[in-house]
Amino acid sequence: MCRTGQEQGDETTSNATFASLLEDNAEELYEHAPCGYLSTLMDGTIAKINSTLLGWIGLEREAVVGRMRFADLLTMGGKLYHETHFAPLLRMRGEISGIALEIRQAGVDRLPVLVSSRIRYASTGEPQLIRTTVFDARDRRAYENDLLRARKAAEEAREQAEADRTRLQDALAVLQQSLLPATLPRIPGMESAAHYRTASPDQLGGDFYDLFPVDGTRFAFFLGDVCGKGPQAAAVTSLTRYTLRAAALHDPDPISALSTLNTVLHERYTSGDPRYCTAVFGILEPDPATGEIAVRLASGGHPPALILRADGTVDFLPTPGGILIGILPSASFTAATTTLGPGDTLLLYTDGLTEARTGQDRATLYGDEALRTFSTGYAGKPPHVVIEALTGLLDSFGDGLDDDTALLALGVPHTGYTPKTTA
Image 1 (cartoon, rainbow, N blue to C red):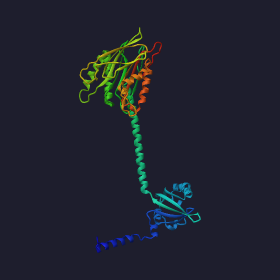
Image 2: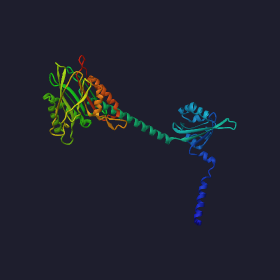
Image 3: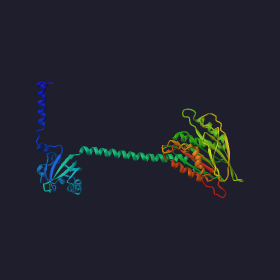
Image 4: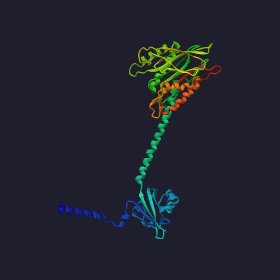
């Protein structure tokens, strides 16, 4: 396409204007560059300095050239750094760049700068002078200060959050302990041991257990799991523990105790926020004549207890018919009975143990049968040894342990063995 004469004229004018912008001579570019330039002798004496840098330091050229050294332009700290680090490195390397320093301005002001220097050598290899470029770093310094303040604020916030979390964990630990027995009572002719493991120190768990006397000869025990976590679950746990204790003192029959608990939970939580739990409740009745312990228990939706026999066998104690406690206004429970002889141990546990995720992909639940197989290796062992072994098993699950776990072992020691009670 042919261009008109007007278009050609406009282009010529534009080119001329652009060319005129490039007519600055080298001296003009040096003197009024957007950065400071200076050349010094090898001893640092300033031989040449541009107007930009003179404007920054607020001095006349005559007062600087041949009269001052580059280090004289720096603050006291900058001068010390120049003498001990900057100058030695420059002599060794021949050039150095991007060093943060501060130069003194008129009065007491300081100007943060970035300094780069290079030695010019003669054809013989002898150093002749040092050329230095000085960049105004005020914006960068302000940005760095903002970053430092933000980092400090973030660090303080993190430390405060960690401190708050520690205080919360301490408070939760104290509250959690208040929902569990401080110690387990001694039962004549028996040994007991317990362990409680929270899945997270940042949340209250809903598992519970207890062991206590109901009269001069019998002892009651229970272990269970409230649905959910947190303060609401803790409230249900507290209500459950005190209800079962009160029910046992009124009527220690396991079916009666669980029925009472079902009524209380259903009436308390039927509207708005339904709550329920699983639980095993039982009565121990030692026989001083035989050294055996008669056990009568009932379960409401809870995993069956394990019996580790002195002869090396391990079996579940079935408790059929029990449903979740608190779901329905009335619930039926079925009692189960067994006898513990010397060397036998009754093990109660919550499903945090059997529902732990295992395998490399953490996709397989540990399960009841795996627990029975594991427990076979501890059949005939006293309760505290069984609990210690299970504690190690829980440790091995690592991050596969998603739920709280409560363990309670009740056993009859072998003849001649001194009973031991741990909680």
